[in-house]
Length: 159
Figure 1 (tube, helix red, strand yellow):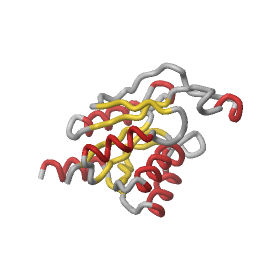
Figure 2: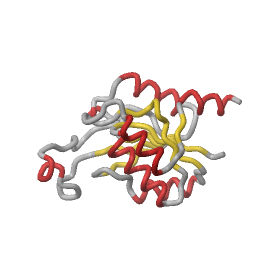
Figure 3: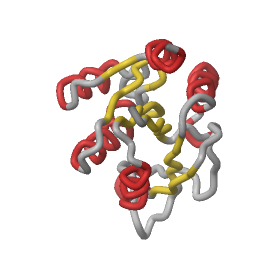
């Protein structure tokens, strides 16, 4: 099965815990990896006007990747979805920051694009509302069904 890892917004702006960065790096070293990088552009997404906060205008991924896709909001770009289709991804493993917002938005976009999103539950962190990410994990299970862990993915790759 052709798998691609999507790391969502693991960047300094969101101050990810080191265990998350390290875990994503372990998995990204084993399979093709793309990352989304959220940058602020008020003309595209009015974070400041609507929320009184915004991500950095310049940042970089803390995870090495084969390709980086810049986004200006919650969901992935059309270019990212097209790239995944062109890669022939049969399953997209999703991990990253804000399980119940940006990660979940990626799941919806992947699902709607006909890709098979699978959440790597131990490589995700929720927002300040729920740092455990459990709300996002539960929503993911409800909407998409497919979840796994980093250890399960690595065991399958090594088999």
